[in-house]
Image: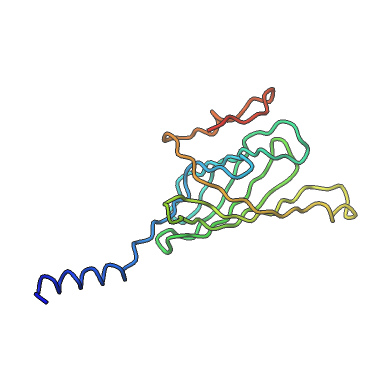
Length: 168
């Protein structure tokens, strides 16, 4: 076998053993979960902290929802391609509850970013006897929504007279 054929065979053999570089997951941006709730996360601070806003489609008491603030922190993106993160939401404008989320950012084989999260919601109750019903636990998967640059969550928030969320 000639040197050209040997080189070609070697290149082909090595190229099947090399895995492609994993795409890093970026937490900032607009996200939607399977219940159509929307979340917009700002750029990360140097220490991994972030803030943003959350517009839920699900409420404890029904009725109109409002955009609620969120604050969180992420493992430094330079350390791993798929960082873990946590954030809290205080439903201060329409509910007496707080929710804490913890999760990890992933990129699937097709390049789609997703946030796999677990959450725990704590609702205020009037007595210790009601404590048993005050905490709920669940899971959400968020997928990135491609949108123009800049904050857009306020433009997607329905007025209280029209509780239906717009479709992206």
